[in-house]
Length: 196
Image 1 (cartoon, rainbow, N blue to C red):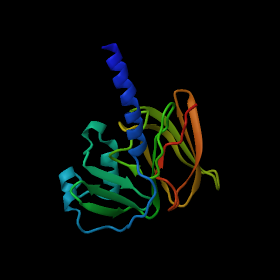
Image 2: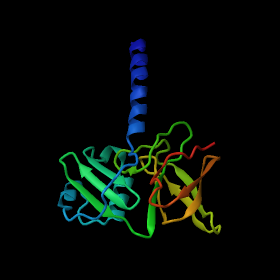
Image 3: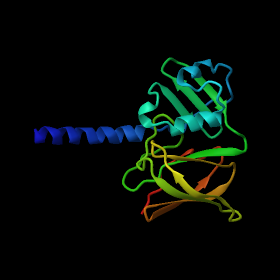
Image 4: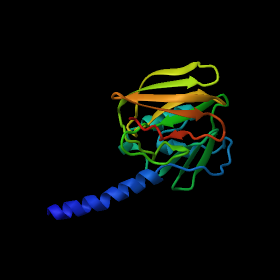
């Protein structure tokens, strides 16, 4: 029996790793612009919500409650929603703000460029982390506070567009800092903050 458990564990670990690596989206072409057909979003309880509200709703939803058939990808200028039934909607994000979802880690992470609100999973779920964002041009502190990661292990932050900044995260006496930018070429998913 013990050998069967070890075998299942050995087989399951790589599958979990594959799922973590493939759960987020990579850069690719996308047509942006708000579409008229958003009625189908009512099936997921998202009717009447603007893009910021949809992002907040899905990002904070417990993982086990996230609809498996819905994909929600945050691009630099649009929220792209699609489902298994072939529905697809592009919702424009604010012109002066940029959404970044941050997943600090200590042991494991995954590659990600565009954050997926329904499939991305980070390591530190439901944990308090201290986040500081400092504009590198003039030293202005844009964000400085304690944020709780959501059940998916990510903490979402809105920053001004077209800036260069330093993002620092502290958790359990460990810290990590990386440069971030908020242009049309930059990621909305940050998974490279290795806390040491």
